Image 1 (spheres, rainbow, N blue to C red):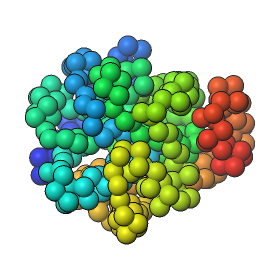
Image 2 (image 1 turned 60 degrees about the vertical axis):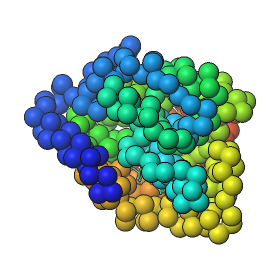
Image 3 (image 1 turned 90 degrees about the vertical axis):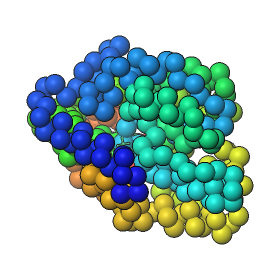
Length: 303
Ligand SMILES: Nc1ncnc2c1ncn2[C@@H]1O[C@H](COP(=O)(O)OS(=O)(=O)O)[C@@H](OP(=O)(O)O)[C@H]1O
């Protein structure tokens, strides 16, 4: 793995998970479930004091919406900036809620631009990101594929409890009883920020359809100017197969857990007609008529 410190840390979490009972793996903080081994309460408690910078490069996503993909893209873009002499090295896992007080202290010394990320609900992102007007790239994904990806993630990730059944996970997801809370709560909160010039919302499905255009938009949003050849290079390095091939280096023991299938529409292999209808109704109830709902092109990808 590129980062031996991160590799060792991930390995130690895996070991700890093996010694932890399933019922102890999650806990609730302010009403929302979180994975205890990755972000214990002391991590969440110090988040409020996080000092963001105006030039932090921030990626935000509800779990399983394509966070690692976008972080991969952003890292490739900042690597290019680095190699032109603007930026020295960047560190491994960028989720601020996984860091804890010591790593956060070190991070304060890191040179800009820092590549950061979070799965936190927008209301729980440290206030300094909003105060500093830090640019935030948000990736969303259709809820049916998000649910399927999350189901496999729970089952393959030792830090999370194994789910009892597909049916029970389906119902937990629908009621928001999963880590980081309800998909719909996150979506509705971002919907309110669609006009914020410091927020850019993209969808997994649109980026999958046109990665090159996505990279052009993302680099322009963060104020990085790439040549067309550099855009093509980043795209080549950010395809699912390229990222999966590098995953043992970039994600250590989590490689196979994070880079699973990388497709649009896998929900068709999992959902019963009744579950599909239930999700359609939930989507209509929460997101029909919203701009984020339209952006997700639900009818195209989920019906
Ligand atoms: N390069 C690329 N192209 C297409 N798809 C990709 C890519 N990288 C990751 N993925 C897929 O994204 C899903 C994981 O989402 P996250 O990274 O948000 O998961 S996490 O919550 O941060 O663990 C997960 O989706 P599923 O395969 O459907 O489970 C990954 O395979």
